[in-house]
Length: 148
Image (spheres, rainbow, N blue to C red):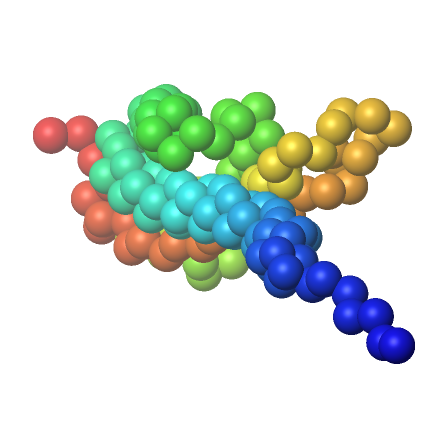
């Protein structure tokens, strides 16, 4: 005499368990990539807009003030931590004062994007971050710094 086990209903339960096991990492990946993409767009916008603001400034003090204002506005817009943003600029050709009339302003902005749901225990939040960086080049006007 053979005994047949009743398998009715097990496939749906297996599908739900396997679906949850596969769905959780997929949802986390989507959220993490969304956060990284958002910060990458913000850093790119910051580089572009700060380069424009600095290249159209009247003098060095005005350029630094404009850079701070634009960087703060972009950081607020894209949810970037303003304290974690690193802004560097230099001018080409090498050896000229930066910024100066007729030079090309080379500006780079970088920050680290923390991954979501990583606890700040044992420094895990510092290890689980993705660096993003963007650069922009802007020609400074030949009349930069000239008084009207």
